[in-house]
Length: 194
Image (cartoon, rainbow, N blue to C red; front, side, top):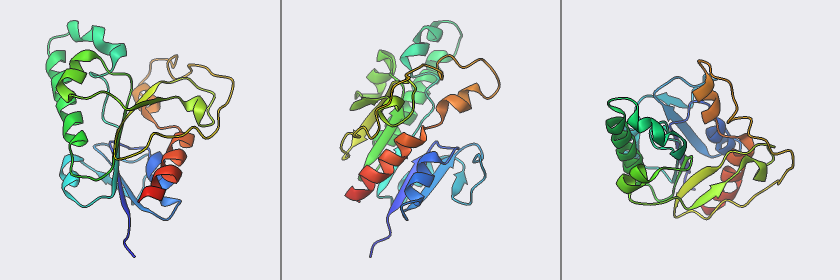
């Protein structure tokens, strides 16, 4: 029987990786920073070389700092941000065009400048409150050969706590973590296709 392989790129938290591993699927996370918590199933480094390996599914969370619509106004405030945006969009596009049969890329709502470079729009917008978390955080998914995620647990008490998070040294890392309910839905729904 074929061993299924899932790559969770640009993921330091291991939330998505661990959801697939719980189902007995070989899943690896990769990020340029160490895993938190540490894991022997984490590869610290650039994800791009890993795209050449054989994977059945890739789920990616590329940096959104220069791509998201909420930050577009900052493109005009500091020299070099337009170049940073172009590099971020090209990185996103490389992942989207990887030779992996099924791909999901997760990012916030993207501004038109990045979309123009990437050349495609998101497939679906999901919210944490559709997957058991009383939180609002519009999350876009670019899907290749994958069906849209079906909500698993619609809850009340919807708040934008992530958006209101106070500034601090770990703010961007905390905001970038995937909600467990979304990770479990990805693993349970998409592993059936593999």
